Image (cartoon, rainbow, N blue to C red; front, side, top):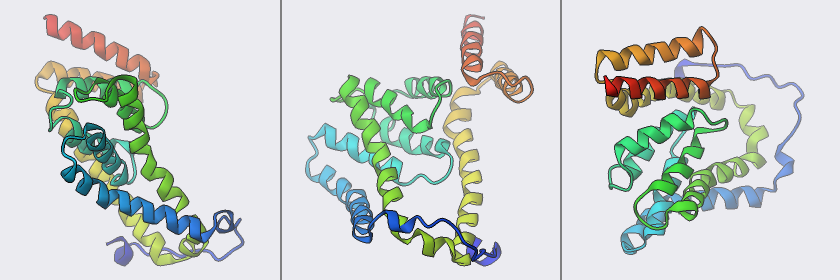
Length: 227
């Protein structure tokens, strides 16, 4: 739809070239490795059913591969990968997501928490490092892969139109991720809604730092539970 309905005009002016910084063979190798892992890991996981480390790598690598746009889009994929098989409880998943909002940097670092607290081995520090490396690996491969051809792609109006359409779709995916699993799991009563609205006001109107809002919400949630 972006290609057909969102036309753009791409300037042919002078721009700093970045294609020559990575050799074409290296870019093609990175893209080939990305797809080999994306389609090969699930097959290996079925063949080697007893290998828990391979299952962890497959789940987090797939989550990192299929995300485009805001990091919050990864939430449903991570939930499907760790909560559905029973590696992490839904309560622990949401608690870790809330804590991740107070930490600077991309939401992908949430995977280190999940790898640390999950039930199957490896967990702890080793599990956190394995999950973190697996979810970030696709990003490195997809960054290196297109670089040799980037100058050609960015001058194509059709390519820019496609990216516009994808960026628009990401907005819908972010709203879907906000609703499920966050809203459906955390907002069950009027008091929960009031606390969520107050947190939004603290962020948008009073400009409080996210870590402070998380702390205040944790205290408010504890108070609501006692009442």
